[in-house]
Length: 52
Image (spheres, rainbow, N blue to C red):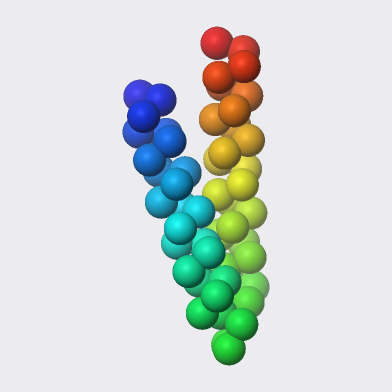
């Protein structure tokens, strides 16, 4: 279960980074939101490790 969370958060981060680097030519709002979601997921994952 933890490995799935790690994989999903890494995937989100890769997608967010890709969209940010591509998005500077066009719109930047959606990639920023995606990266925020990815960061929040990583924070949640770290907290899970600390408290469980």
